[in-house]
Image (cartoon, rainbow, N blue to C red; front, top):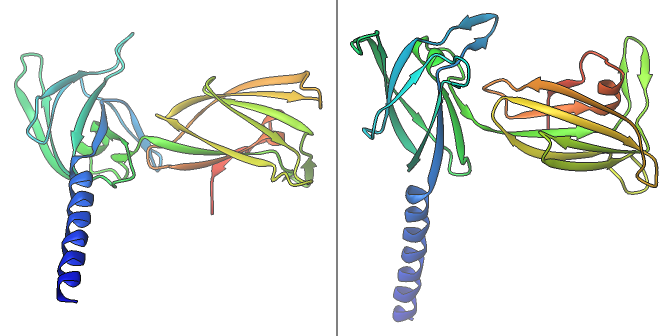
Amino acid sequence: MKGWIIRSTLILAIIVLAVFLYIIGKEHVIFVENNTFTIDGKVYEPYDLVRVTLDSGEPVELKKPRGRSLGRAKVSTTGLNHKVLVEILDDDDNVIESKEAKFNVKNNVEELLLNIPALMHDAEGWVANNQKTIYVENKPFTADGKTYEPYEFVRVILDRSKSLEIRKPGDGHTGMDKGVVTDLRHTLYIEIMDNEEKVLESKEVSYTVGHAQEKLLINIPAVMNDVDGWLTEYEE
């Protein structure tokens, strides 16, 4: 009996150690951006030149976005607890302002987006999940006393790569599907089809996801009829 308890304890300890090593060793991707940040009506502009050091690693320099320059760098790191040092530089690479901040990564989050202007101004949402879940529904939409009915069959393409096919609710169909996209700016391409998958009508729209937003809801009848409110935050 005693030997069984010892063996069980050792097995449990090994499992716990394996989980711990997996967590601290899992790689996360941090996108550091020196881009305009808007929240609660306030706009924080990018800096001409910044130097960013993550976890005492190799510094990266980011200029203000111009032309093909996106004002962004990609850094890979491991673990859940991190520290970032931001240095604002002048034209001669002299530090004119600096700030250090700490942040945590959830184990189930693979990509984070870190905005420098927001961090420097202590704005909420300066670090956020870069993976956004987009819920798309083909359901009735009511606005200003008018109801826009769902379509029999629609194909929705998120960022021209992730395809969703959604039928009208009923006969076992929920009228909803979802996909995961990354970053903030996106394109939605919609095709209204008949039962033989012939395209009857199509439309393309662009939209932006806020830094702190992780789940959004898109209503297809509202999009197709140019009705305000077709894009909202998704509520469980």
